[in-house]
Length: 294
Image (cartoon, rainbow, N blue to C red):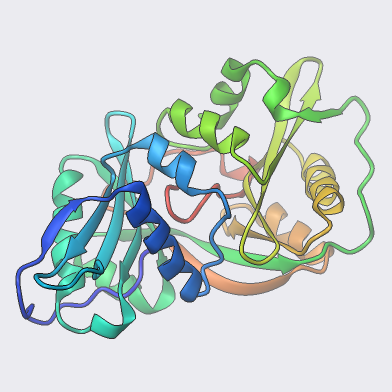
């Protein structure tokens, strides 16, 4: 989730390199301090998706990195930018814009997406991004207990299904193949992956992952509102913890479901792209996967 672009003339030139796993643990701590509530086991699937897609910046004589960005490639023409952070004690010195420029250079000729916080959206527009939709984060414990399973629907652990079934379903909601990410995301620790089947066809998928506080749901796909209600409330019961999910305003049924379940809107971002927004199955997209990788 990008934030804190800073544009003053830099005090010195930074050394920018591919982040190590250790660097990503530091970046995660920065995100946690910002209140972004990262997942407890996100680093493994992030790194597996694009090992060269995370940059870290250092300044001379300082043992601790000063800025970070993720610029992860998906497929041949898509990319996603996130984890754009500058260490709080060195903000305002132009370090962020150096790592931003290095990251964007890596993504030349791709349609780049990001989820921008409200305060920084004007800065992203200056960098060539345009808004496609708004994500609203809803949080809380769903009211009313577990919704009944609709007739003809079977719920099952998604990791037991043929992987080709999962990747084909995911392509309805994401602009590029991301098989490596999906395989690692579904099977990483601290996760529950729930699928809905009807006559052998996948008609819903939701993943709950434990975070610093409670659990976050994503991806969250469902072919009908009733299937979505069952998936969400079943995961809430299984995790027994407050949950949060980021809902695109392009799916009014998803927003209505969150309100029906007495979840509270707490946070807002804008999905932005450098080119034409890719076509997605918005009526069945109930929650985006992650603000960091799309």
